Length: 360
Length: 275
Image (tube, rainbow over all chains, first blue to last red; front, side, top):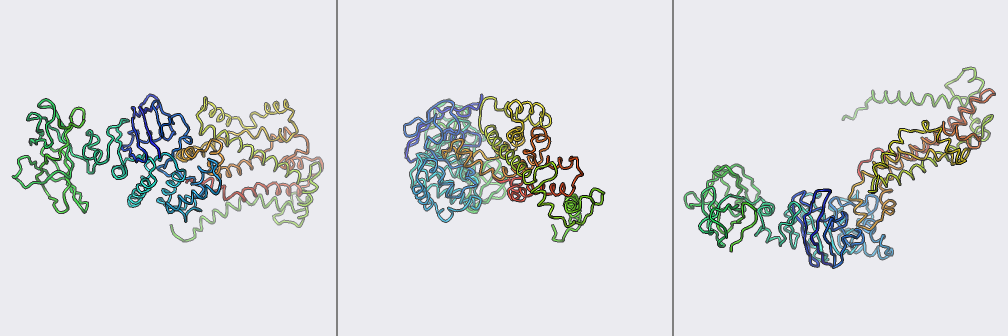
């Protein structure tokens, strides 16, 4: 149970700056998920907190104590690695006991703590086995156990589920969430998987090219993405973007394709004709019967992706741009359809900066 | 693949085995025969009955040479000292080169690498001079120490260590293992198979040393088995070939025993990929 505070954290690899000043504060027991595409610096951020890489400048405070210059072991942080990093020559018991042994706990204490953790994770029958005799999910669990048994102040997860198959990933995801809630240990969780990010995090930090672009709850990130990058990154299939310009005194957008859509949530600041990017999620695009809606657009069906519970239609707009639409199961058209963009579900971004424009 | 026995392969393999076994068999056969017959060039493929020659050479040796048990002991001591010494030094130097960032690390690595171009034979005279300067001629230390410094083992172990996943090193760091503890608890056990394979190779290397022992140890108490065999042949009196051959057979046994004993580890070390 501890708070974590990062202040103006920077990291250079030689002349290349990979993290451009990250500020972050975690409350005690919070699970914060760091999400971003590969190369965005999310793993580097985690390794800085762990102490596996030296920071270039800034501060890392764990429970009010600056740990930025300390050795990993002195920080009281445990980490779950992507490839589990279990010691191959040690039994499950020894893997879990190793850190405790180094700290000089007595044998009965170690045995008691390892057993307690093993019970909690359902590892008790496996304690004598070697890592190579375990399945992927079991190894994952041992890696978690090795972290938990230390009772650390902070958990770090470095894409812990990315080596598991899809079914197991869902199970382990739920298990991690339950465990984290139950133990209420402050945690940083790095992933590139947006489903993991949405389901696990109390809050999300979206990283893009070494900068924090949005820090908010998962639902807020989904509903009010801070810029076009976040909007396109979170949500599957990805959000559609259409170019347009501000019109009608800031109360509507006139899309380059023709339709003019009024803003349902209010007026935007800006000169008439200011370039905008309008985002709309595939599930919010409404099919309309021909001729009923003047703002409708003709869509030529290019590809159908039936997912069982729904169908993704990827079609071409009159200007040949691609647009994806998510439809309920049986509504899939075969050749073309007419779609409209409901005013209530528009995301408005500045075309130049990509930043979200909120109503004034 | 089919399940039929591949006779061609078996025949080729059989011929190969025969080819390698033939000289060994000849040596064994000769050791049991009458030395006078061998001297006349009447060497038979069929072994004689003189098996007692083994006991004789072990306890008595041959004219001008120490008993073979003593020769074997010296050779065994030398080979073990070289193998263990080389591994101790190589583990530490490879550990430093593979895991630590220190000034001139690359320079150190290349210096070690370049010594590969200077085998014992090339540097034998200066080495002798150094040993003489230390007063180590005719000592066990002088016999073994110059052969211990080894680039080959360092390079092999460096590769082994580099193949260990970074995450394992990092996990140990997070667990609070310091450098020496990591070496002892994680690195050595994980590389055990490779080190065992290296041990076998180095033991045989040490066992087969000839030139250096010949030069540095003139005292017959420090004669190795290889030197002993040569001395037996070089004796002024007529050569007792059965004793020479018996000694040769005895000289083969320890390396074979080491290979057989460590075969499991040896093969694992050469073939194992998953760490």
